[in-house]
Length: 190
Image 1 (cartoon, rainbow, N blue to C red):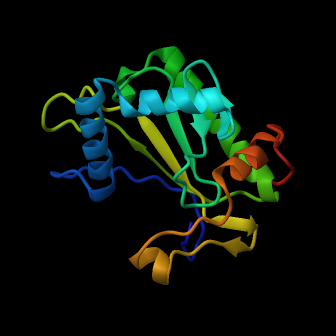
Image 2: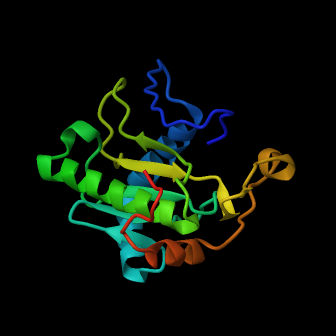
């Protein structure tokens, strides 16, 4: 995404503590569960499905959407349609559905500006080191840096880094643009 020598790669991280971003999600999901007796992301997904404005793709097991709090222009959240906390708890058909939704989404990303589209993606699943987390819902985040074209990137600097990120387009507009794209790869893609 920002490397001087662009290349696809994957990293697996393991820590003795929960890093900042997943910890914020854990705290929020735990507080919501304590107040409401239900899963925050299950309830959020149902609300988004009723509205339909920010949903990009769906299949039997997963939904992709541009979250209303998106910071990156074409940020996507991939949510399991049923309450499942970790990747190993997916069924065989769930794993196949995940591969399908990723292929369809990344094809749309590539077609958006007719280039191999850069992004960072990561799964957030239930912490495994401190007991059960009934509130946790498996999801993934896609953070692509491209803003308005293949050559205009979003950089987080100044006020965005030190105070509050600024949105460059609405989540609804980003979802509509991604929804409207073909799932057939353009020439020159991956």
